[in-house]
Every structure is written in C-alpha cells, then in structure tokens.
Length: 458
Image 1 (tube, rainbow, N blue to C red):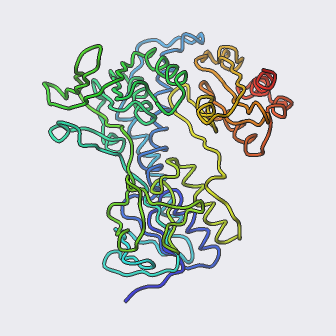
Image 2 (image 1 turned 180 degrees about the horizontal axis):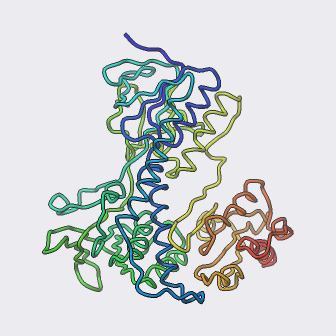
Image 3 (image 1 turned 90 degrees about the vertical axis):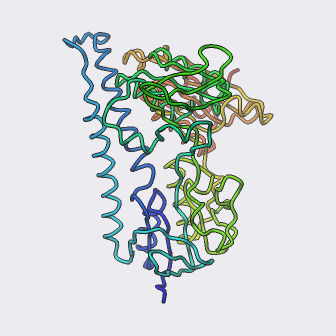
C-alpha cells in the first residue's frame, strides 16, 4: 500500500524546504524526505560553518595587525581552537534545527527521515513505505570527491566535511587542491596558527580565473606564509613519523611534503549513485550529474532535479534560484530558465574575490571584442582607510554595444560590491549608464562608475 501526495521532494538542502513551503502554501500535499542532516551542505559543512571560521580567522588576523591602527595589545594572541570550532558547530546546529522546525510546522507537509529511492517514474520508497506523486523533485546535493590516488587507502585524510570533527589545531595542514574550498581552509588555518601547504596539480591556483587573478590570489596567500606548490603531477600518500607524506613530483622543490594532517579538496560529486535513477529511466552525464533542460526538467516527465546534483550550478544561491525557477514556472505560469541567470560567485579568502559574468579572458576566448578598465585597491579610499589595499577592480564591457559583460573585484568588500555589477547586468545596463550613476562615498562600490567611465572611453 502506498501514500499519495501532490509532490515528493527528496533532500532538504537549499532548494527543497523552500519548494515544500511554496507548494504547501498553494494547498498541495507534500512529502519531503531527508536521509541525513536538514539544511544540506550549506548549513552543515559549507557556507555557514566555513564562513563562521573565516570570521574567527579574520578576528585573529586583525588582532595581530592591531598596531597598524594605533591599537596595542599586550602579550601574544592566543587562539582557543576548540572554542573556534564549537562556535562554528553552534551556528550550524542552529541553522539545521531551524530548517527542520520550519518544515515540521507546515500545514500540509509530511517530513520523513530515511533513504529515499526511486522505484518508478512517479513512485519512491523510503523506510519500506511507498510514496507516489505526479511531481518528484530531486534535491540530493553532492559530497567531496575522493579520487583513488596512490596510497590514499593507507592514510587518514580529511574532506571539507570531516575536517569539522577537529578540536585540536593541526601542526602542519597539507591541503591537496588549490581551488575555492581548499584556499579558504588554507588561509583560515594559517591564521589560527597552523603551518599550511597547498598542493595543486595544475599550473596555477583557481584555474577557472584569469591568470592575473590566480597570481594575485597566490601572492595574498604567500604573504601570510602559506606555502604553495603547483604543477604536482604525481600526487601520492604515505605514512611517515608524526603524520603523512604527500608526494608531489614537481619540477622544482622537494619531491614530497610532510604534514601532520591532510585535507583533500579536489572537487565534488553528486549524490546520485544510490537513488535508483535507472529504475525511473532518468539520464545522467558521465560524472553522475542528472541531465536537465533549461527549466530543470529531467528526461522523465514529472521529475525535476535541483541544486548541486544537476550540474547547472554548485552554489547555495544557484540551488535557491533553481527553486525559484521551478516554483514560478509551475505555480505562477512563468517561463523562467536557468540560462537567464548571470554567473556569479565568490572566493571567501581575505580579501574576498567577487565575480560576475564574463572575465576579460573568457570574453576574448569567445571572440567578443571588449573594453576593460581596472583600478587597484590601493586607489580605493575605503580600502586605504581600512589598511586593506590588496587586489583590484575590473569591468568588462562589450566594445560594440557598450553593454556590461562582467566584472572582477578582488579586495576588501568585494563579495558585497560585486552585486552592483550583477544588478546592472541583470537590467541590461551599459557602461555609460553605470558611469552616470551616483554611488555613496566612502565605499568600495563608489569607484565602479569611475571605472565604467574609463571602460567606455578606451
């Protein structure tokens, strides 16, 4: 015997709870199933706990620099690492319980815990019970990728999830992976007092970015005594006295790095291998991501995939936007598409990197003629006043139409100021329009009209 619902949602990450609430308000009977932790990656092992740690690391960094501001602290700065981690756990737990309480308080929504699997196009099984609905939404997220590197089965390595079990600061943290997740952990643990080495297989850090951004990020990290090894073509692991030896086989430097602990940060994979997708006939790509169209529909009518599992975005904000697209299309008669959104994200080192749309390199690679304008943060009054002048601001403009194509801000306040560019792009604004706009002084974003003015005149 089975229970019938109007909608079934598998996974209580960013898209799932909001979708359940919207359907519930529309009078639909909903079942949402979560097999592990409510809130998904963001709440439990992603944004909330990591940005809490970033905040603690920034406080330690600022305390060490207090003399730069005329403030003198007597004695050494002492890091209570256990307390730092406890604060992150507390904030994460609060977020998780908040999501679950919200869902359980909805009038027409049934909350279930357990491992849900598809048994057909409109039917799932969870805890031995069958549930049916004309609409099924897969919001199952992803997890850290752990490739089969030589020796990895003989040592203990951490991922971005398991690292939160630490309550003692590592003496020397070796991070394998020089992209967004790895670099955030690198800087925060260095600021907590650990020795840190970053090992990257590719020729540079954050390879998705233009080379000048990669180099600037590297310089910021190396200025804090974070060791960086790129071109590590033969990464392998072995036990050694007091820790783990990571082979790098680089062209220069030592052939191996010894550390007390290792964090593996080499990408993520979707949680789609145990959902019974084949029983429902749902197609995936070679990496396991569920194939969806522009409206987030799978190849099976009545089944949608949202969030990290669909390969159309790997961020909390893209997952939430997936919910908005699906809900508006189904309930409001809209025709929203994934391709309508502007690519935007941030790297939350200090100072942060904010990115929107096309970089100069990406635009040129597409054959688009562009104008660019740049301003170093050392010429941004707000950055000078805060004594945080690393980085730069850059705007990319279509040479023919004057439309703003993208922007890069690496520097203090970048994660907030980048939204000025995103909003202008969303409204089809030109560099001329931005240059004519008045921004508030003294802020980081106040220089964007000035940069736009330079871009349109080149």
